[in-house]
Image (cartoon, rainbow, N blue to C red; front, side, top):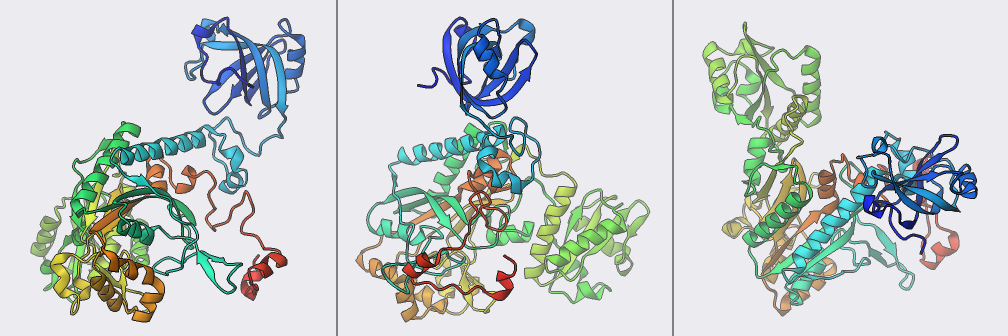
Length: 591
């Protein structure tokens, strides 16, 4: 054994005891006669004192010690003088008087300070991730991640769920995000893919009679990166048989409340039970299917008030909606131009505004409205003198998301997003289908195994875009943290959905034949949910992106800066898997 105790364990009750510690040098202070070293391990720190009067050899060796050296130290625990007690650490009442020192490993000077949480370039942090993970903040994030996942495992274990591991090498069944492809050595010209999620596998487990399944699953998606995305990520996957939507929603809410109250008791949960909004309601009120409910500023439909106005843009638009920016009537032209540009980037043609000043209504469109019309607009929006009225006119599909962005932007500028509050909500009754931007054909909003709402079965043939699904999401402070659905368990209905998605019988057999065959052998009604664990833990840790709660993430360009991946593969290895590489000229020149 290299140590008798860990670096957080010693206290005044251990005074006089002979102990051994091992760890990294967090700080070193040379006071001439005395040398002080703060020794650090995963659990904490202990101050070590090297006194030549106690052991000359150990003191002399300590003179050569530098930060991040790995040491083994023997010594006697003694109480610190009252004036020297450090209440910030668990071992602050004691120190270790060193009698022996062994340098287990020397270290170069790190490229950034380990003992302080200072801003460091992320590329440097990711390149030296093994050093970054030594820092207190990152260590705490990993520990929080571990504890939350353990709590989740215990929750489902206590409810008779089986944790079942599903394969990483599976069949490619394109249905959404781009897949990572793995060539087969044994079968030339054929490939596996890495799973985007265990969706089909967990449904097959229900066919197999597992009944209650969960998994902490690794998932892979070859998509563009952003703050809450990574090429590989961790998902809590849950599936149950003989259940309803209410069963899944209630159980998920129970677990979310449990982990919130246990790991973030400092947060105020805005509402229990969680508010539920249909997709349509969420879009109409907040312009988003993942609304941040920590503040109001709801969208208001004013189409009926402006259809006879002299402002032709409003009078001729399919819909006109607006929000109130409280106490923003004094916004400058520059600020209004920034908001207008942001709305245009969301697809709006422009942004109309009226400032309600003490001297009256001001702004480019105010002159088009009579005093009575202005009063009606002010009343419907619930505005007061000093507020700014913001309007967008266009098709509903453009107006609502643009105002949703505008609402969030105003909320940020006014500091309305209270960091002390956790505002959960549930969004359900999503559309079953949407039109793909690339082809204009029907595509699944969630995935093709999501069940239509029973009340809308009659609409499938003639008005499929009006069909609601039994899909649902959980949202926390404007971030989607979990999503799922009740699945189709009827083979005929599943085939019908494939037809509507323009997936031919041959194509459906090629991609999903295993599912359709399994459905011939008795399928229980089933459904489930998948949590984005990285996103949830990111919010719990108070971080801005999921890279901060993952041990070894990729950067924003999907590169592993520490290992240097992706890399070229040697020609013999490529030949083994029957691959010939042809790099496009425009890409090869950039590498």
